[in-house]
Length: 497
Length: 99
Image 1 (cartoon, rainbow over the protein chains, first blue to last red):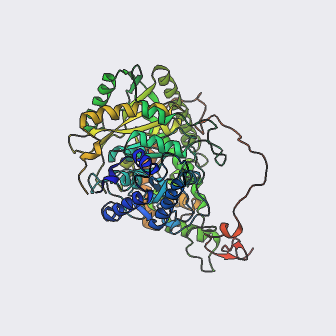
Image 2 (tube, one colour):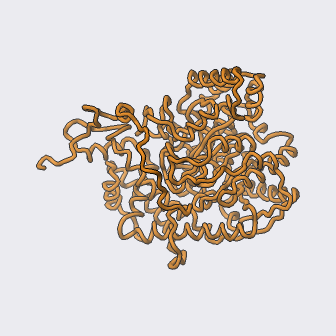
């Protein structure tokens, strides 16, 4: 593996700007790596080598002309295949969109391009971002680079695996119930869910509109902050986008100072259902925070225990409405249009053929929860629980600056283990879901390997709405201390592919 | 909590425009029954006086000036269509034979 692949995105950006290496060389090194490891990992649904190299050469030419570009100009990025991209197919991991070429770029896509980032290709995901393992992709599962028989997390599992396998230094994801933080945790990398509304949903194929949040993956906290800054901020095309400055995430990642910071350990996360090795690494991380000068207290968030059931009513309800747009009329698959069938029959045949089982389950679950007679008991009650969860966060953030928990109850599980047991799969997002319901910010950073299986464990750091910089400040402090202890990044311990 | 029956799944599938096969109905009935049983736990929360949250942000009615902006050209909008006729989306019949 060439040394270029191990460099951080921040280093690559500096080297490219100083013309010590060309963006084209960096792109080629990553494309070579993709060609080498993709047969094992399957992180990408689409790789566009020619377009990536052309984009990289364009950056090189601009730099040669003396243009001053952003810190990530020329740095490669892998882009989750749920953001629309002109010139590249966008499938959302579904057969219903196989081969679709979007007529417009998502705002996140446009901002990546404007920042000079080189899009290598589109990454695999659970169909329509519904899942925690990437097994729900219609195009086959992605494999965890730490152990190819295990899941890379989901739904952004292609993005986490691509970064963990050194196929890209950066990638994008979306987090609706944990779909960035959980894959980051189980592949030993950094993943951030920004404050809801801090990053634009325009051109992000909708799963649950009140929860979906684009965010970055990287191999270190500073790189994640740089990517976060590159694609975030107010967007007039997304009416739920926050009209405020992006929190100072890069500055916070560079400072990495947490002396005097008040840290709350969420009492409700831990115990039954949690893997002992995960809890052991988590407790060590809490001790580490204390040794770095933080004041650690236990905090109770009594409604968090109801976050998972509330989420599995709210998210499917929103999905059942959002996915009504896949109607076989304007784009995507059309099945059974033989001149005798009605539009409604064609719709039902197309959706049955084009959607996978998890998507069908969630559409029907949402339809059920929104049905008259059930609405108040299910959807209405879940929305009240959502209020209580936001109140728990508010109360907690009066006492402390950040909250911490394990990111996931277990390490990466074997592919196939939970594939036909939806409830077992849903438990993977136990610790990440409250943040989506309340809309605040949270990051996952690596905090070691579980003793029983040698697989990565993530530390989740949660901050208030628009307190994204706190996630980076604490994450960077933990990363620095742990890397000093380990003698390098956690990912250096991963077996060679 | 009432169990989700096969007939109920067939009804949900019709509402959801999903032409499911018979064996799928049985499979989904068992799974949806289990999921609904688990999520019904929200009923345990005493929340009579709690206002519902549809959204995480206190935003309502975000307006922009009513100005004409550039948008997709017809050929772009039609570029992904399964069938096109006379610059329009061609769709299967939407009315019954007798209509």
